Amino acid sequence: MYVPKDGGIVPYNGNEWPLPADLINHPRSGATFTKILQDYMRDRQLLSLSDAIKKMSLMPAQTLEDYVPQMKNKGRIQVGMDADIAIFDLNDIKVNATYLEPYHPSEGMSYVLIMGTSIIENGELLLDASPGLPIRREVVSN
Image 1 (tube, helix red, strand yellow):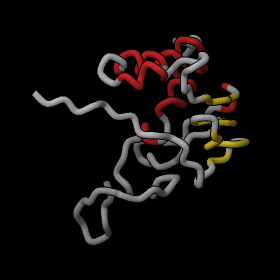
Image 2 (cartoon, one colour; image 1 turned 90 degrees about the horizontal axis):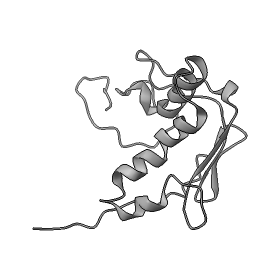
Image 3 (tube, one colour; image 1 turned 60 degrees about the vertical axis):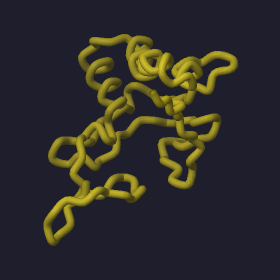
């Protein structure tokens, strides 16, 4: 949501990144997975790396796969799957978003590949890359 200077609240329809400072959003907009890696795995040692990755990839795919068949190809690195890949050094992961300043992007992802195309290279977001495809469920009427 966007708060214009003249008051009110309107939906934000832009594609700016990092997000503009005057948006109303939550820190997880830019820090969901880095928060898990930084806080729950590295700092507090509550999760192993394999458990953290499973919770961020395989488990959500398995939750949806009975309802959205395309999810059976997600969250797994196997022949025939369309897994996306993130490459990072756990020591470089840093959450920058806060509740007061939620628009700060996280740091530490060296490379991110979506459908084999880089969207992050050498830690830099490639704003002109958009390789993803929508995942849709067939509409069923009663």
